[in-house]
Image 1: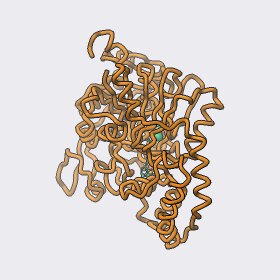
Image 2: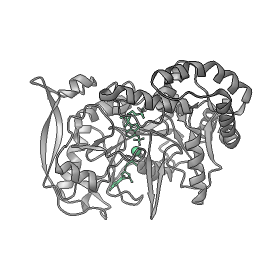
Image 3: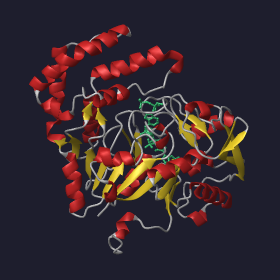
Image 4: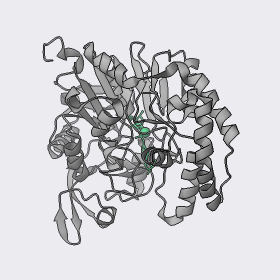
Length: 436
Ligand code: GDP
Ligand code: IMO
Ligand code: MG
């Protein structure tokens, strides 16, 4: 039984939480493969609204094993808080497994992230201030701490004694407070005690599930346009959000994946700095922001809003080998008179159809739009494509043609059931139909 990947095709917040929750019913295990608590994934079931930063979005189902993979950077305090929150809501967290090899976001990483952003001033990336960059930086520099290190005070003491002088020097140069070895050792060891029962060799956990014939879903955080390699560097996050990141960060091989579901919304948003060619700075954008509740789940910052941009989507489809798409938040466009779709850019007088990941080039890109008539009626209760207003159908068809991949699910509201399922091969029916 193969694995499926859920990946964001835009700048994050495409509704990966809703998509993962929707698909999770059909699988045995959901694995987060990268990012950290910079992510904020929302799951809505009936009146219950769950905002998750680290625990995978399948956790509401009692049958799911939730795995935080080796590619994730874990702030233990956030994780403990999230586990407590889930338990207080009566959700069983005993099946939340955390990779022993996942790197730990330490308090000095958070302090470095914030102090560095303050220093960048006008050139800020607009990070979430969660210590993501410094933690992945230390991982690459081989000076990071991994979750398993939290279980051994002697290891913690040796490593921190070696590390902290450098960190404190840097923090001091940025006007930030230093950290003290023994206090950090105690704090980190306390996290270790609390999280010990959740730590596991998650690669073997995932591999064993696949060997048993169970279906594994890998949930990405952020989106392709924030990917460290494929986004508009340096206005990106510090991990590989693309589907390739699911193999390194989730403990699977490329041939174990048989479906990559790209998630995108019917318009675009971006949090933080960086070029955004279709950005709306007028009252139409304000209206979409309000109707779509486009406020950062993690930071509470208002999200920048713009029209759907097909130029990076074509790139995202290619680089992720997207095999199917879920289009979210179509309902938010109800009531607009006309809806432009960006099909190309004009850069320095020339038409450009390939996404230039260079932030400088993108900064000069002017969108070339095709215009579509809007529809007035709310569509929250529609459950089939045929039931959509004709103009909404036309819009979905145009987006699908531009993406070049079938849109198999269309979301018309935040709740799990507010979803249009098109005729496709839903994962739960594959085995029965002998398709795998
Ligand atoms: P993620 O980071 O990709 O999981 O996305 P977020 O959870 O940060 O942001 C998506 C927001 O849109 C959440 O508040 C969802 O509950 C909500 N949402 C998802 N799909 C839909 C939809 O089809 N319609 C509406 N109105 N809201 C949606
Ligand atoms: P989900 O998983 C939207 C953005 C930040 C900033 C850049 C770098 O909910 O889609 P970082 O803190 O990662 O070093 O910040 O990335 N960013 C996100 N934007 N959704 C997210 O996650 C994001 N995670 C990071 O705003 O521009
Ligand atoms: Mg989010």
